[in-house]
Each structure stands twice: as structure tokens, then as C-alpha cells.
Length: 145
Image (cartoon, rainbow, N blue to C red; front, side, top):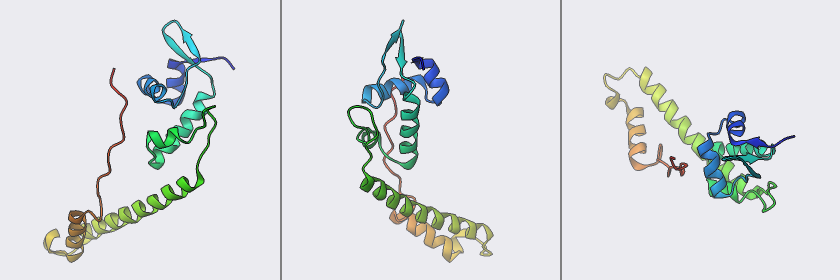
């Protein structure tokens, strides 16, 4: 299969060209040359971008994803890291379920005010203590060009 220019990779992968350039700077992908000013990529970059997207969707940082590839570009995924991330996601799912259930209860609660509902007040206290809904550090975004 022939080399794909950056516009074609962006179109096929749904990843903006600016992000592709950022990924290349981070060492996540590698161009194989240029056609004029446009970077060229091996078609295999599409599968690599899909793996990166899966990692991002699972909550891995770009640095963690970078370590999931060997220097020759092949996936080298630490299974223990996958188990740890799955455990982390289980915790997140439990918290989100608790929030969802509390919100549904509050929506249907017969108390005159949400703040008079003991279940809703527990949810508010849990949120205030950081037990639910704690914000995570934002992932780095590609630089704007």
C-alpha cells in the first residue's frame, strides 16, 4: 500500500493534522518522509492511531501510551498496567453509579426541597469531601498552531 500524506491520515483516522504533528513530536508516530511540505506516513499508522485512541479512551496518559510501544514501533503492553487501569475504571464506574443513582433519587424525591432530602444531602457531602466527582488532572492538549 502506498504512503499516506498527513491530510489522508487525518481524514481516515479522524485525528486532526495538528494532533498528528504533536504525536510525532512526542514519538508516538513517525513520518516516513515528505511530499512537498506534507508529511507522509506508512498506512500502518492508522492502526497505531487506533491503539492510541483506545489508550486515551481508557484514560492512559500520552506518556503511558508511549511506553506501550517498543522502539521498533510494535505494541509492547504491560499486562499489569492494564489490570491496574481496569481496577481504576471499576472505581470510577462505582462513583459514577452512585452519583447517577443520587441524582435520579433527587429528581423523584418527594421532599419539598432537594436540600431536605437526606439522600441528596449525602451526595452533596460526598462531593464536598472529594469522595465522588473529584476532578482529575487534564491530559495535555496538542499545541495550537
